[in-house]
Image (cartoon, rainbow, N blue to C red; front, side, top):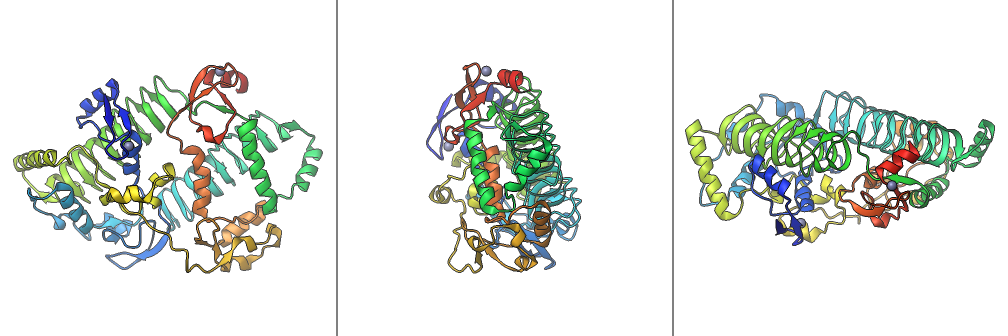
Length: 548
Ligand SMILES: [Zn+2]
Ligand SMILES: [Zn+2]
């Protein structure tokens, strides 16, 4: 079925398989194309600048990525989960002469939200979406990490800086999608590597520099074998302590990515009948990305252990979800955000609820509408009436509107995936945008920093630096300086969020492009935009044959 997207006006197609899944999950067919649906979902997941604030309950200091002029009261995570307050106190009657979303938004603005997402951490105050971690700083989305700075989406990574989507690694810097590695710097898509720099798609390599597609090598530079002594002598001459030198190497590394390295068609492993990228152990998943241990899911980004979900992004351990964002441990949940509940619709931040409709911040409730308690019969009757009204007004079947998202779109996860989004388009959809005022920024332009890390002393940690790209101020922390000195890494010139975004770009492609396999020439769909200029892309068979 062909439809025209209500937001971007582009035509999109709903396949027969999707139609049957929409039917199974029992939600209306979408009126938005896939990117517009995803954009709205991830606009509910802030990637805001870290700031200091205060709990609206206790005035306790908090560090949060939520915006300063918050749309609702903010409590500390601990307070939010405590019994010091009751979300039922904010209950509202339904008014059938007003739009439902208007009323839900009114309720949402009264109910407190937690300052941070995560649990069981020590010394991770300046973090968000952090789980079972220790001593991390200005980092987001991590589990079982330790001593991690300025990092994003890591699992079991220790003592690293600027690590993005890395697993089981230690002492890494400025690396993306690297696994089981130690002292790996400026690298991408590499595994089991030690003490190396600028590796692209390498495995089991040690003491290598600027190499690509290598397996089990040591002392290689630009894929050329050297003796240990030759290698060490050459490395000495590279002046890795110099920022200008590293910039030249970074440029050369991108040239290698474009002209020399062979890139695999996708990063999928152990899948059956699935289409997408970074899929692991999935069956019949279609148009899914960064998704594992799941079955029969459509159009889902980021998730583990899901069954029969459609348009469920950032959802984990769930079944029969339709049109949900950031929900976990849920069953038969529709049009909801940040909830873990069952048989419910239009929830925001509801934990272990059942049969609730249009509620915010509830815990373990049944038969509630707009945070008001009803009997089972009353609930069913009122719910049917609201759905009828919503169908008339054209609201039913649509996700929570942009106006209910926590803050500026350009500080949300959506903006990482769709950085080309225009302010006007978001404002036209009643979303939020933050203009960055650069006029009063005081600090040292990073062009004035010493070229070599060797020329830097601890006094730098007391200074405010100004990012040349955004005008944002940032500092060098003592732990960070120690890491740079210890590993001979020059000071960064850009704000840490910009560094993370630049790395993450390589993991943010949600659309395949037609390429020819560089070995067998057959047509393949791969997740590399043509503007990246990658020359060598291999189909899965040829990649396995030639590079495994
Ligand atoms: Zn669209
Ligand atoms: Zn091929």
